[in-house]
Length: 185
Image (cartoon, rainbow, N blue to C red; front, side, top):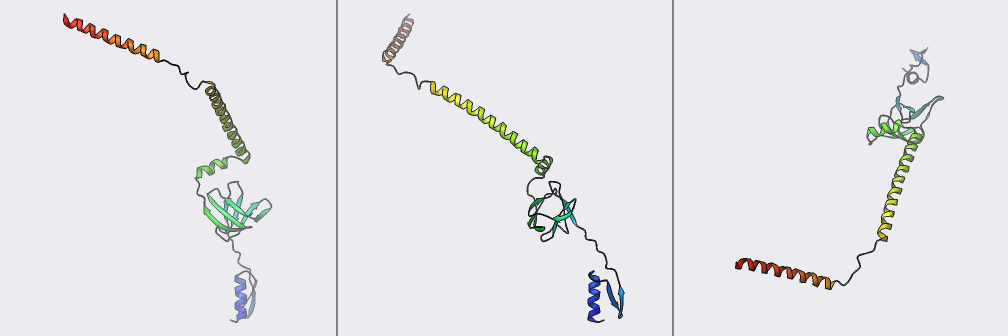
Protein backbone atom coordinates (compact mmCIF):
# COMPACT_ATOMS: atom_id res chain seq x y z
CA UNK A 1 0.00 0.00 0.00
CA UNK A 2 1.29 3.42 -0.94
CA UNK A 3 1.35 6.33 1.46
CA UNK A 4 -1.21 8.19 -0.63
CA UNK A 5 -3.60 5.23 -0.36
CA UNK A 6 -3.10 5.08 3.41
CA UNK A 7 -3.88 8.79 3.74
CA UNK A 8 -7.04 8.41 1.67
CA UNK A 9 -8.18 5.48 3.88
CA UNK A 10 -7.57 7.59 6.99
CA UNK A 11 -9.57 10.45 5.48
CA UNK A 12 -12.45 8.05 4.78
CA UNK A 13 -12.33 6.76 8.35
CA UNK A 14 -12.48 10.29 9.65
CA UNK A 15 -15.35 11.13 7.34
CA UNK A 16 -13.34 13.70 5.41
CA UNK A 17 -13.43 11.85 2.06
CA UNK A 18 -15.77 9.42 0.32
CA UNK A 19 -13.32 7.81 -2.12
CA UNK A 20 -10.71 5.20 -1.26
CA UNK A 21 -8.28 3.26 -3.38
CA UNK A 22 -8.41 -0.48 -2.84
CA UNK A 23 -5.75 -2.40 -4.80
CA UNK A 24 -5.25 0.61 -7.11
CA UNK A 25 -8.97 0.77 -7.77
CA UNK A 26 -11.00 3.78 -6.54
CA UNK A 27 -14.02 2.70 -4.59
CA UNK A 28 -16.58 5.20 -3.32
CA UNK A 29 -17.74 4.74 0.22
CA UNK A 30 -20.08 6.61 2.46
CA UNK A 31 -18.63 7.99 5.62
CA UNK A 32 -19.76 6.20 8.73
CA UNK A 33 -22.27 8.30 10.55
CA UNK A 34 -21.36 8.59 14.17
CA UNK A 35 -23.88 9.64 16.71
CA UNK A 36 -22.59 11.80 19.47
CA UNK A 37 -24.56 11.51 22.65
CA UNK A 38 -24.81 14.84 24.37
CA UNK A 39 -25.07 15.29 28.10
CA UNK A 40 -28.21 17.22 28.92
CA UNK A 41 -29.01 19.12 32.10
CA UNK A 42 -31.80 21.38 33.30
CA UNK A 43 -30.95 24.61 35.10
CA UNK A 44 -32.90 25.73 38.18
CA UNK A 45 -34.75 28.30 36.05
CA UNK A 46 -35.95 25.55 33.68
CA UNK A 47 -33.46 26.22 30.85
CA UNK A 48 -32.10 23.11 29.14
CA UNK A 49 -28.37 22.96 28.35
CA UNK A 50 -26.37 20.39 26.36
CA UNK A 51 -22.70 19.46 26.08
CA UNK A 52 -20.67 16.49 24.83
CA UNK A 53 -19.90 15.96 28.50
CA UNK A 54 -20.23 18.16 31.54
CA UNK A 55 -16.48 18.50 32.02
CA UNK A 56 -13.96 21.33 31.86
CA UNK A 57 -13.15 22.45 28.34
CA UNK A 58 -16.33 21.06 26.77
CA UNK A 59 -18.68 23.29 24.80
CA UNK A 60 -21.97 24.07 26.56
CA UNK A 61 -25.05 25.04 24.56
CA UNK A 62 -28.42 26.47 25.61
CA UNK A 63 -31.38 24.82 23.87
CA UNK A 64 -33.83 27.42 22.51
CA UNK A 65 -36.78 27.32 20.12
CA UNK A 66 -34.51 28.65 17.36
CA UNK A 67 -31.80 26.04 18.02
CA UNK A 68 -28.74 25.68 20.21
CA UNK A 69 -26.67 28.73 21.14
CA UNK A 70 -23.43 28.92 23.18
CA UNK A 71 -24.04 29.29 26.90
CA UNK A 72 -23.41 32.80 28.28
CA UNK A 73 -20.54 33.57 30.63
CA UNK A 74 -21.38 33.02 34.31
CA UNK A 75 -22.22 30.35 36.85
CA UNK A 76 -25.16 28.12 35.95
CA UNK A 77 -26.84 25.92 38.58
CA UNK A 78 -28.47 22.64 37.55
CA UNK A 79 -31.45 21.05 39.25
CA UNK A 80 -29.27 18.12 40.33
CA UNK A 81 -26.99 20.43 42.36
CA UNK A 82 -24.08 21.09 39.99
CA UNK A 83 -22.55 24.51 39.43
CA UNK A 84 -21.24 24.94 35.89
CA UNK A 85 -18.89 27.91 35.46
CA UNK A 86 -18.60 29.32 31.94
CA UNK A 87 -15.77 31.87 31.68
CA UNK A 88 -15.47 32.01 27.89
CA UNK A 89 -18.77 32.07 26.00
CA UNK A 90 -19.86 28.47 25.50
CA UNK A 91 -16.78 26.83 27.11
CA UNK A 92 -17.05 25.12 30.51
CA UNK A 93 -14.30 26.32 32.88
CA UNK A 94 -15.34 24.39 36.00
CA UNK A 95 -17.97 21.91 37.17
CA UNK A 96 -18.54 21.43 40.90
CA UNK A 97 -21.17 20.13 43.28
CA UNK A 98 -23.23 22.72 45.12
CA UNK A 99 -22.58 22.72 48.87
CA UNK A 100 -25.98 24.03 50.00
CA UNK A 101 -28.77 21.69 51.10
CA UNK A 102 -31.18 20.37 48.52
CA UNK A 103 -34.15 21.69 50.51
CA UNK A 104 -33.10 25.28 49.82
CA UNK A 105 -32.95 24.53 46.08
CA UNK A 106 -36.46 23.09 46.14
CA UNK A 107 -37.86 26.08 48.03
CA UNK A 108 -36.31 28.61 45.68
CA UNK A 109 -37.39 26.60 42.64
CA UNK A 110 -41.03 26.83 43.76
CA UNK A 111 -41.11 30.65 43.63
CA UNK A 112 -40.85 32.89 40.63
CA UNK A 113 -38.65 35.95 40.97
CA UNK A 114 -41.75 38.13 41.42
CA UNK A 115 -43.03 35.87 44.23
CA UNK A 116 -39.61 35.98 45.84
CA UNK A 117 -39.50 39.78 45.73
CA UNK A 118 -43.02 39.99 47.16
CA UNK A 119 -42.06 37.64 50.04
CA UNK A 120 -38.92 39.69 50.79
CA UNK A 121 -40.88 42.96 50.73
CA UNK A 122 -43.55 41.45 53.02
CA UNK A 123 -40.88 40.22 55.45
CA UNK A 124 -39.13 43.59 55.50
CA UNK A 125 -42.43 45.43 56.12
CA UNK A 126 -43.39 43.13 58.99
CA UNK A 127 -39.96 43.47 60.63
CA UNK A 128 -40.12 47.24 60.16
CA UNK A 129 -43.55 47.36 61.85
CA UNK A 130 -42.23 45.30 64.77
CA UNK A 131 -39.29 47.68 65.18
CA UNK A 132 -41.59 50.72 65.11
CA UNK A 133 -43.76 49.19 67.86
CA UNK A 134 -40.71 48.41 70.01
CA UNK A 135 -39.31 51.92 69.55
CA UNK A 136 -42.67 53.48 70.51
CA UNK A 137 -42.86 51.30 73.65
CA UNK A 138 -39.28 52.15 74.72
CA UNK A 139 -39.93 55.85 74.02
CA UNK A 140 -43.05 55.82 76.22
CA UNK A 141 -41.18 54.08 79.05
CA UNK A 142 -38.32 56.56 78.78
CA UNK A 143 -40.62 59.59 79.02
CA UNK A 144 -42.44 58.05 82.02
CA UNK A 145 -39.11 57.42 83.73
CA UNK A 146 -37.91 60.92 82.91
CA UNK A 147 -41.01 62.47 84.51
CA UNK A 148 -40.51 60.66 87.84
CA UNK A 149 -38.47 62.35 90.58
CA UNK A 150 -35.00 60.95 91.19
CA UNK A 151 -35.54 59.92 94.85
CA UNK A 152 -37.57 60.76 97.95
CA UNK A 153 -36.94 64.12 99.46
CA UNK A 154 -34.40 63.95 102.28
CA UNK A 155 -35.72 65.29 105.59
CA UNK A 156 -34.24 65.60 109.06
CA UNK A 157 -35.86 62.71 110.90
CA UNK A 158 -33.48 62.50 113.86
CA UNK A 159 -36.29 63.34 116.30
CA UNK A 160 -38.41 60.51 114.89
CA UNK A 161 -35.55 58.01 115.27
CA UNK A 162 -34.88 59.07 118.85
CA UNK A 163 -38.58 58.87 119.71
CA UNK A 164 -38.82 55.39 118.16
CA UNK A 165 -35.72 54.22 120.08
CA UNK A 166 -37.14 55.63 123.35
CA UNK A 167 -40.43 53.80 122.84
CA UNK A 168 -38.54 50.57 122.13
CA UNK A 169 -36.45 50.98 125.32
CA UNK A 170 -39.58 51.67 127.39
CA UNK A 171 -41.27 48.57 125.99
CA UNK A 172 -38.26 46.44 126.91
CA UNK A 173 -38.18 47.88 130.41
CA UNK A 174 -41.86 47.15 130.82
CA UNK A 175 -41.34 43.50 129.79
CA UNK A 176 -38.45 43.10 132.23
CA UNK A 177 -40.55 44.48 135.06
CA UNK A 178 -43.41 42.13 134.24
CA UNK A 179 -41.07 39.16 134.19
CA UNK A 180 -39.58 40.24 137.56
CA UNK A 181 -42.99 40.54 139.15
CA UNK A 182 -43.96 37.10 137.92
CA UNK A 183 -40.84 35.49 139.31
CA UNK A 184 -41.33 37.04 142.79
CA UNK A 185 -44.65 35.40 143.30
